[in-house]
Length: 169
Length: 463
Ligand SMILES: Cc1cc2nc3c(=O)[nH]c(=O)nc-3n(C[C@H](O)[C@H](O)[C@H](O)COP(=O)(O)O)c2cc1C
Ligand code: SF4
Ligand code: FES
Image 1: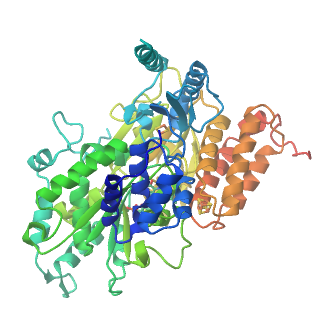
Image 2: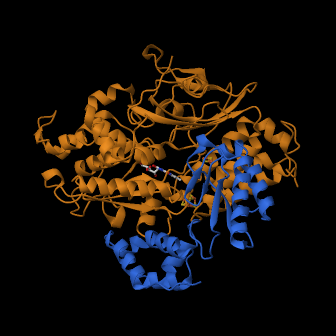
């Protein structure tokens, strides 16, 4: 399902670049745009964007490999980022991460993003989300979850099941 | 009884208060900007004629406002260091990266009162004759970036941004730049690199500070979200009035973030230095104390980068009574007023105002392991002591938690921390990652030794 950049995409990149005195500055915002649009940053996308910004592909690859939010492989339809840092850990986020990973057949000792074999869910154990007063905090796609507990995770797992049922049915 | 003093958070969380421009204006928003843009040149205190912009900068200097991003650097002084003779454009960047674990104050402003930030930013830009500005917002604030985009659009339509703002002849554009999950981007020179489209490797300083060589090698001001909101209040009240709030050298209000083992975690705005740590943690109007049956064990006063205080710890402070000529007196760490100066004099720092409370159920070894993993993960990797040291520290702590600690491990942790700290690295992250290690291990030595199967005072053996 690899999409190629189209004229429309190129126009959007040019539009982002126009905001900056130097086109290279647009790199991060362009990568965000491409990842949101295509799901992940594939080499053709990266190389095309580099060309348009007047950069070498390596100038963008070194960003994609540095910043944790960028990915070169697709994430699940649901991307759940659970906070692992101190205030959330004190509120039990490690147990919640383990619980979720075990339910989904993922490795609880892995903190980086991992996706279920059916490609449905990506779980990531991330650093402080700046909502420590609502610990444990999580980010599910763009939705901010406060005071996550097992009940909330069970509800999420049920939602996944019913989605799967809908697709099969 | 100590109470909140809401200035920046005045409207936030009030029923019916929304982040749109109409609501902001109904509450008096942008009035300060309108007034500032009409300001005329006038004679300053020293008889020199000041331009309107100089007058605004003067107010900020008089207010003694200190930056709320972590270092507490005086904002007026920072602005006075801007090179205004280079002929190059002056840039302003709002640091909205908020990623110090324990801090969540900027987020409240960004999500719930974005126009207050914009008004402060436009005032700061006007005062410094900047015509281009950026808000660098952390990547995880996805909704926040969207709220800001909408706010910028509204401000443009209302004539507060763009060309010839409110007929004043002043032009300004503000753009949003999203980070992508790297803590180091909060460090101002890493942030600038990131904004230039490069890996966020902090720059070597001194000699070149952003106010002289910043974005695109142009003079650049980097200020925190809360700082820029405070600027709005300084201009609104006048610098001298603002300076009456808080305490000397710690003027104004600060938003304090309380999290961890307290009954009422949350954000509280106080007059700086008018409330003690004990009041913040225990009073009903703030943290409300600990959970039933728990006892206080430790307090991290300024984010995970600060040195921890042990409950009951006595700290030495210079006496404020002039007759005692600064003689040191010992006070309980909990009884120090929460501000920049006193917390620093007590050996720690208030940083970005992030207080994390630990009760007697918390293992200090586990807590430090959690913090160490954060630093190991977030080191940008540019300097060897930081990159390797933060990783070793984290690995040793994991080993201790697995029950495989060696008797010499506490000393080993201290040795590594000391080899990172003290100006051996390009940026302050190195010291930040050493401080918790050094303070946890020395102040909770018995716990670390016990976890490593050694008794206090036992000589550390070989392998
Ligand atoms: C490792 C590191 C991380 C930082 N993170 C932030 C941050 O997330 N937000 C922030 O405003 N300042 C952060 N700072 C401080 C900035 O470098 C800078 O001092 C600040 O943005 C200046 O604004 P102020 O003068 O208004 O405080 C960080 C500093 C270091 C060394
Ligand atoms: S001290 Fe650490 S974070 Fe700072 S530049 Fe060096 S390696 Fe990077
Ligand atoms: S520690 Fe989890 S949101 Fe800050």
